[in-house]
Length: 458
Ligand code: GBH
Image 1 (cartoon, rainbow, N blue to C red):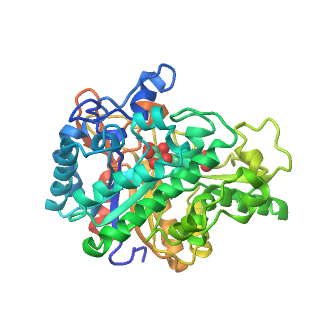
Image 2 (cartoon, rainbow, N blue to C red):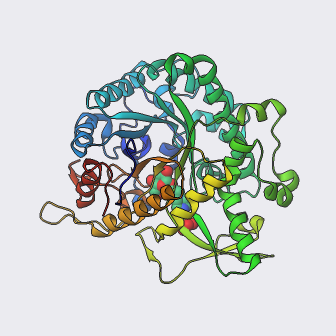
């Protein structure tokens, strides 16, 4: 029988900047995404998150729709500048009130809140005045902000995620410049990543030493990884694929599970890769109570001793000595990402093996498609097939003893897809951005049925 084990957590996920809107309401400060989206030329169609899905005003209806689906859990993020408008100092009471009401509404509907403390909307002042993630001091600022959240919400919130996808913050923000602060640099990604990891560790230390015993919650980090399959069977390509995954996920997960960056990164990067102090190493090792994993796609990796004119000329692939490619037979999403469920199974097994069988929660997985509203409904069979394929792959991993404990679909509803603006639709609910109306897609009904059947899939 194709059934998930009892107790498996079924949820959906969103993030603050992508859905809330209300960018200048409730005493909120500006974030780097407010500034970036208002910079002409950065976002498709000049879209911004000013209004987005207007979730800030519509959250009660949204939670009702989650309850209608039978969701067990909802993963959302807190906008740091809503809590601390300049990134430091006292909490903004209106910001606290908003999230407090959201949490209460979720609990009234028996939906467990999973909070991400940072999903990319850094207070703009921290960028202007402190150089964002390049400044080591940010780890303390982040831990102080986290403590405000633990204090205000920890009586009701028992599931915490410090950072969402630090790989994206470091690489897209400081290496290829697609995300704010828009830097293009060869080495800043390693420095930003280092401070992201330190910030995570400092926040976890705050939780464990001041809150966890009393509040009895769990805390971890969510990392993202796309799988890399070797292009050919050659030893060189197989080593290249392994190296690519270590540079991707090992970069962030090795310090947390093993105390330092992967050996292969040290060898290749030498002094370009920062060092943790002994004290930091102690804090970071074992700093995640569960393995949060976001996964979207797969590519082939081939060995490339010297990568010149690489399609992505940011230096990342040169550092890895890897060149990526796609299989023409792979189906693609609207983002042009490959649909390869088998890669998901391999990744889950890789995580299980490398990190000693941690409890894994898939905190994002999903796809963007060309959804259209016809006669009041959205038929998205390709998304249903996507979820069905990826969930079958997850079951395959569970059959091989991977401790997968939960799955959050990305996303509860269509939303602001970063540099793609509203041109992409990842949601289980279709959002009419003119009226704000949400319409469950066929995939939302399919997902609800899976939950209702206690995790039985097609
Ligand atoms: C997530 O990031 C974000 O957390 C979320 O906010 C966002 O809306 C969602 O995904 C959808 O984009 O062809 O193998 O190189 C996604 C991170 C990193 C996933 C790059 C896809 C490229 C696929 N992405 N990756 S590959």
